[in-house]
Image 1 (tube, rainbow, N blue to C red):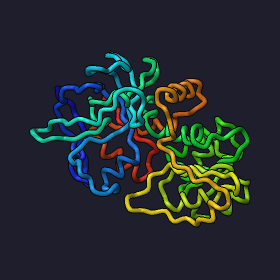
Image 2: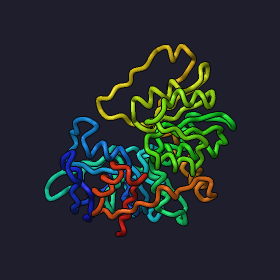
Image 3: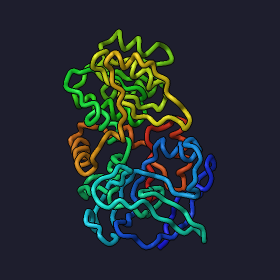
Image 4: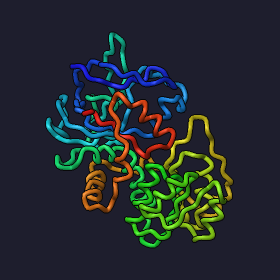
Length: 343
């Protein structure tokens, strides 16, 4: 069986769209017909060579999506043929199969345990989460990375209680999800920090009570004038924002949660006194989600309209236009491109 795929042949060059041959499934693997794939900044970093040397070229990309199970390998018990699934880089229950190798005109193309920039993909069992068949597949694709990361950074990592204060540094896809999670958690105030006025306006629409443009004022000073801050969520990938997030939280109990991915080679310089003041700097692995438990909860938040997916569903591309999706995301023209494999 062959399928169309977007192949990263060389970093900082356009992806190649071509047919690849799907290999026989290994034990613990699942063949999925991809309906939608998300595109996130991790793929930008990989495609543009911002994660350092890439020893796996040529290879496939994509780590979030939705689809339907077409075939299962031996020992797979979590999913069955016909199931609708969320596909995510976050590990759930089931076999953990590191990846597979596709054939491309006699050449080997590597892939990880999950790749979604193709119309069909071989996925490790533990990267699949079954969802009700009536749940929209475009919204399901959002639950593979940005949405659970942003929600989980608040719900699972920070764990605020009502009326605690929170600031979100970076109002892209993950940051906007964190702001909505803060609103669901009844945080107050909810402070949004960014350098893009349009993103700040969106943050206000989805729960932010205060907006700070970091190009105009010192965000740490401004936050301290608003409140004694309980939590800061850093979702920009900027080491400066990470530093400011820690500096902005209150002494003796404030916590800064770092979500963003910095470019390869970037470093973070901190004053150790910040820790002597009783502050915490917390890392999070994608919002510390347990997919089998948390993803169904997030589906319910969407169904109940507690979480608004509208800002993430406006930029739809075909697989053939995936390079445009990467470019538009890089240039800030959309929050979260979605690749619709049916067009």
